[in-house]
Image (cartoon, rainbow, N blue to C red; front, side, top):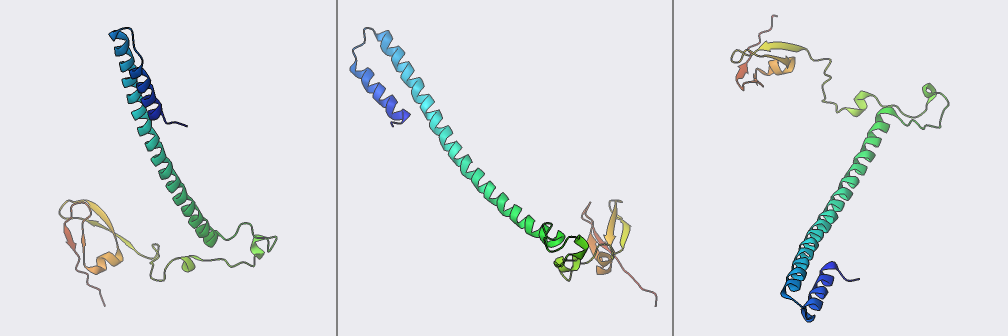
Length: 157
């Protein structure tokens, strides 16, 4: 099957070999060929863009499939296998359940255990909330204005 550009070139050759009755007819056919060539260029450009978009869609689909598989693994780890056939009652399930400690790293702090403190920045007078560990470090940068806040903590014995 010939491409559109080959067909247009063939048509040009035919028209150049035909003796036309008037110069006006030649102008009309030349204008039609010029339009056909422009349309062919646009079609080729769209075809290449469609091919590129198709490749991009395939890549996104592949990544989504990988993310879906990873998410499925995480859900199974957290919630267990819902299709468990080992028991009739979920409470009697023999499969291993995982707790938060099994999933979180050992050095991860439990947010509920850390006390939060309300601090007003002396520079911008905005209220910020800081964990006790940040205050014990002695200094922090204000997230609103960038001012360095310093804390001098003394403990009563």
